[in-house]
Length: 331
Image (cartoon, rainbow, N blue to C red; front, side):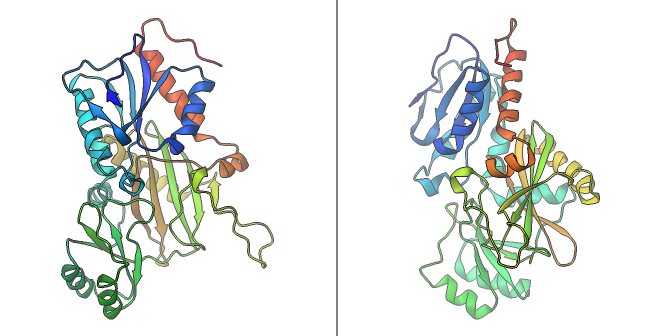
């Protein structure tokens, strides 16, 4: 598709490369009668000389786009965001957010600056450097992961130097799309869960507890749903995703939520999720920031909290504020 798509009236523009992930947002916008345009960057061209339309532009570009055959979607989206920002358009999750989305190294630097703990990490560009980093870290268990990741790309648990040597020479070892592999201390969850903190418009919305019994490669989107995990000894079903309503009031919540918000303010993030694991030493270690966040409807239904309608209303309110006479929205 050639951008820009002209429009006589201001509208919400959703910039992305994955239709499935955006369907719930589009439905929520339709329920509000909010005008929007679908800017799918999976196959796009851009006229840099054109005048950008007026409206609210929300960037949902994903670091894992290449895993869906959209290798250069983030690169052209960077140009699109620069084009919009150069014409002073209102962009949520702009260039700075995309820069952070596609690099865990950038994420970790931002997290550490805000005072949040990050697992010990070395970045390498080839297998020999990975082995040197393995020896330098000198830890009992390490994991590899891709710097430009998502979907658990490149994740492998290594418990010995011999295992690391075998891995880098196997067919399983694949370099990150940006050529940077991370070697990171493995943090064993103290209670077999990880926590994902959701923020919309810089404000904390809720925390999701994620059961890691079936592994870490869990996405909260409904299209990635694996269902509830059951154990014969459980008194009740153990769900893969559960919203922790008491997190904000907890000691841990009061400690880490403001630091996450500091990262968002510093890095130009409007909508984001932060993932961390509490290790057996009691420390919360942050290892991922996701600026293309998705939500799990089953967990939300159990908790009575719904993020996509909240996000849609946030976008619609910003659009209404942009116009002089307002736009009629459904109640």
